[in-house]
Image 1 (cartoon, rainbow, N blue to C red):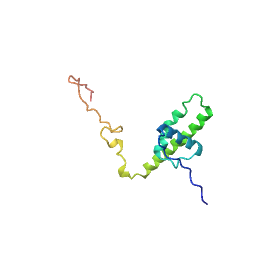
Image 2: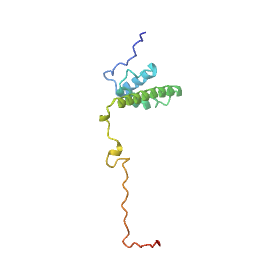
Image 3: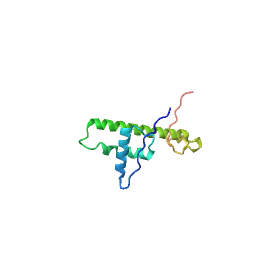
Image 4: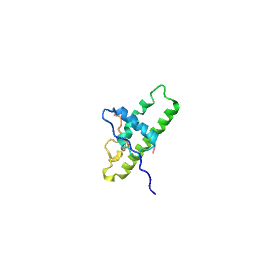
Length: 127
């Protein structure tokens, strides 16, 4: 069984602004429901222009809902790709755990040394 090829988007056109290209990518995801053929940079650009796309005061709420669905697909694709990259990294290239760094967030707390006041009073316990 052969499947038809996935749809692709044309690259940025000469004279096309980044916002225009980002809106075109957002429209591509909205109509085609495909994120597999887009690069991470293209998906991030589409996410970046999402607020511009819904900023029109005359936009219908149904259009905002559909754009929000497309944005969720974009964010899901980006998160999945990030998780795949993290899982494929060898352990040696991962950053050191926070607790092993000096002063890290989970660094072991050092107790304050016990000091006696200079004029300390001795208490006889009676033993």
